[in-house]
Length: 284
Image: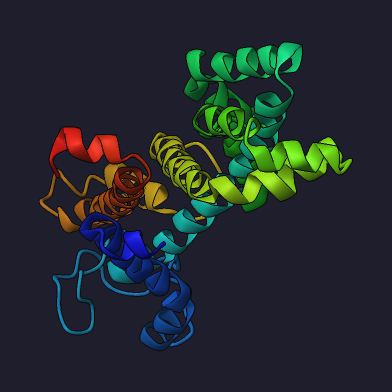
């Protein structure tokens, strides 16, 4: 972990995502103070398309809502969905990758085929159909659906590490001491590849947010949960771009870019530390 402190990419990514998380956590207090108890999604609270000012730093949208309040609210929901879905996907990935990497044989073959199938099939149309036909979707339900399509990538990254670690002497010692397979997998092997789990988690979070944003932009998903994708959807269908109200759509896109860039920087920083050969090849 000391090496990570010396990685500019990792530290930059960590600072950016930390700032975004702090903004998301402070959203209820900031909006309650700025909007005097009104909801950020309340229609007609202000005049439409007000120019940026001290009272409304990013102006208002076509429904008379404060754009900054909407964006902070959307950031909170996008991060919540991303981290919840990413966490669930990582748990599934770690369990299945540990099982496949440690047991091998038919179990590994089955899990490999399953993960490859999810990676190969066009998951977004299937995801869109599921979201379209599920009668009631809340935050957790949406996160579970996204997690199902997000675990395969992290699983493929983690499984080779399990396969390499199971041949270590301390694993043989655990077998001699009659440790069960689950004890060996999760007490002996798991702690030794936690950095790879963090990388897998970051990948799952990014994939979940991207998938959720794509769904919301085309109008799918719970309309009462104003994530950044939903804010972009409102801006597109209100004709904001056509009348020159670019901030309404560009700022949520900027927030999404910052999320993806920060997580990618964290991944690259960890990858360079965990894989010295990559650092030698790139020269970075």
